Length: 167
Image (cartoon, rainbow, N blue to C red; front, side, top):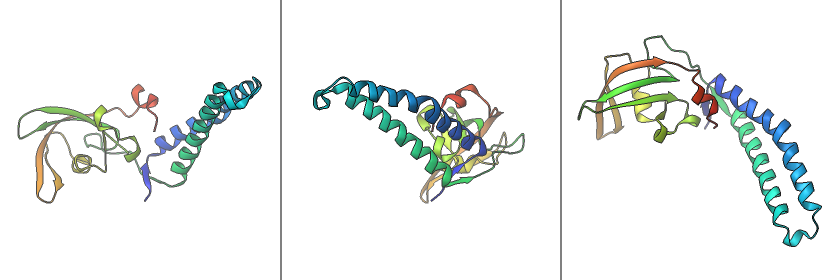
């Protein structure tokens, strides 16, 4: 299965890989060398900690490279009045009148606890391409679902919080 990513997601991952290879990797290699120089490796906690950090960095680089290699690039454009990827949407739950605000994102960036809902989730699939005022049915499974009313759509794909969020 391919992970769905936008071109902007790919560019952010490539920038992180570059940072990890050019800036972080040399620092971690130096830390390993320095810790190794302190003598007996069998009781050298600094050496093992430095090696662990170096390995975590290398693992992260491999993960990001694999994600890019296997990604399915999807468009992030949608009509100005339509819900699409990177759209913030406020919805009202018809059942109890409560409102929630979500941002629809690609599968790799989904984080429902922070209001980032994947377009592959039931609510994400249901909301895609709808407009303000639409009544939307969210099917959780064949025997259960609920209705939402789209209250507000905000198109702000370049928010600062997105630039800080890693994959």
